[in-house]
Image (cartoon, rainbow, N blue to C red; front, side, top):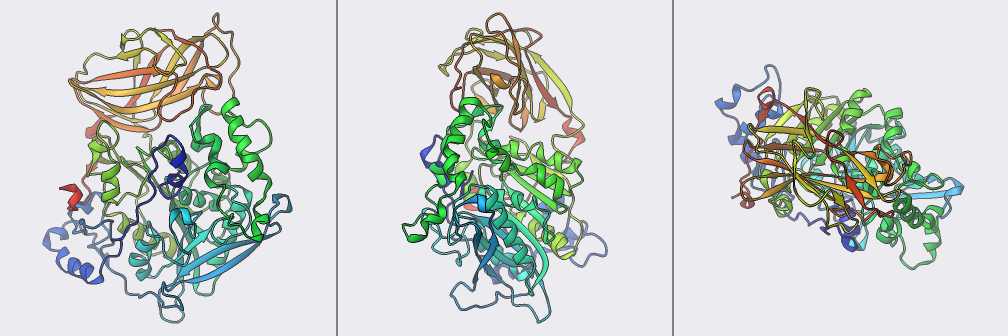
Length: 621
């Protein structure tokens, strides 16, 4: 689940390993910022100012930011104005302060229970006496872990901490890094987002919000694993937690690795195989790492692949966060997701954003065509954006050099009650690079378009049978489109099938095909024991004689298909990095009205499109 997270874990799986690269150039000189500010605002920009705003040159709608002079040749984004405060000096060379937060662990958690201890480091701005400041915090397992090269938690992380300290702290924010249970100097076992970790996170939020230098408002931000801890903290309805910024984070652990009963290759080994070494260092305190969930984790992962669900106990239910967030959380959510994220698939954010909105939570979405990364990293986004429908067509427009300014405005409003209320919309980028605004995503103003397999989409290759060898299956294709087609959301593929046994699996690849080649548009996967969709076993059927309809749903996508191109669907037994089904079966596709591809289309001229600040980094040349 990460580029700090599951990237470290995935080295032993079929997913590409891509540990976070250090961002050595994250620090932006103050003098450069002032220089840029001095030349930024001429008469041209006065036309887009809000009347009466003190910072009218800075806080403009997102669709007008492209005309402002952002710094766009650095290795990450930057704010438009440098803050007035310096970093408060402390006794160490990093100007941080380290403390331990004690909390009570339920005795049934085993390990170190009941004496939980969380390791925490923080940085403060040097503000006049009497001024209290809010706290921006990152919680995760990577601080002071040798495998991710963070020597001690007192050193700001190169992936995010450095940037926040450089650019947001001077505006009057404290910053904290927190090691979750079983990692760094925090005790107990590496609970992989379970109860012990959740309680530790809640205790750390309360500590940060209750200090005499804190104004009582805390924000959590992070990517991947560090983007999942904000969801955990929000479950408690903690009075100090005002906003969260999950970046490619998890709303649930099982949801990361299973889709309609189908399992990713890493799923059975995620708990002990990836994170099991965290917290073990060979000393006499390792007994505190022996927890019940640590023991049952691997077996739970294997059983979920075999049966597609929770066989016994509540291991997965304990690690599902969204339901408790909806019930208890009263803060806001700024949800960020890469639409080509191979590590944390976009179904974590879509349709989660609409669920938040529909439950009265103030929420904003930023969904771009990047991989498992931050929105403003040109070097990383360039390295991971491949042509052929894997983000390359949207580069460099995907780079959001205005993101740090966006965070500043978000935190100013929700942590300080300053500035203009952020626009609560979704900024979505198409696979061809175009940015537009939607009030929700998927939007409510779409029109469904259906293509029937065997007629509207002719079979151009293979027979109607899908063998469990992952290499055999039918391919369907439309006639050339007569006009441009704009698709968003989660297309459906409802396929009428018969099987030789109870089980089997279908993988569907959707492509945009031109004269010379095809590019990836989206994909779907389903264990046929879950043919009705969702996470509940469907009613069994009579193989051979009986038929079922597999109601497959694609991972979220946003695509522009040009007139003259065709849409192609290929069906196999598995694909991407998903395992073969534990219940292999020959699957026969029944073509006709029971088997349809359903797309949600929209009229592009009805939408607000804009261009973000243009990249001038060397990788964009």
